[in-house]
Image 1: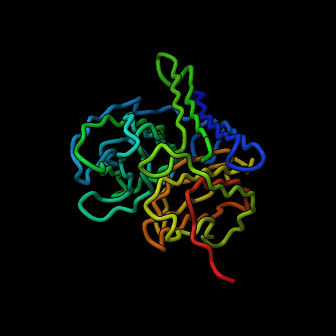
Image 2: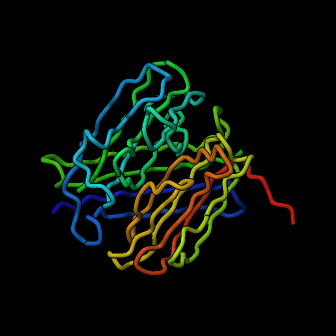
Length: 139
Length: 138
């Protein structure tokens, strides 16, 4: 087994009267166990220069076991804070459920059920060439 | 405006043949701007079993923005997990100790964030960083 950790820190000195400091570390384990996840896609980079809805990560092109404990990291590496990539889950030939917008520099980390047809989709706000990084941890 | 930063670090010394150490930091801005998000909802609650419970309601003022959601499952039994829903879609499982951080589109009133506790009731913490939400009149 491997030991992989994911740490998040959210902090602000002025979003409320008192400081906000949220920090957490998760060790990525296989479903229902304390055994570390051992498989990953590695860090991938995709250059996107289209505003059309398309798959970023396709279930069929990964070895992810559905309904387990897969985790996905996605990062919009652009510095343009007025442009975004809209991340969804579903079929890019249909209407995905949209999770949210990654503006330039934004990232997300979330569990992925990865059932058939639940690809991770990307729709850029315009056709400006943008590099999106992603990484999947799975069993 | 407020300044709120989010930092993620993914690390492992043995999932690859070389060490993994990936980090990213971002200031949380309102949609399309460099103005900081200035609203927050931060809660801790117990999710009972038996149904999908709405944790964050999608509201008109929160739709199509750059809002961010953090959720952490505080359970300690590794067999317990929370199914996380956006609208009617189960996007994935947060096992005990897991956390997630996503932008929230909330494009329609049906796109609430829902939680379904599997295995037993579980305590979660969540934070919504936002630029506005529609309040419900009493």
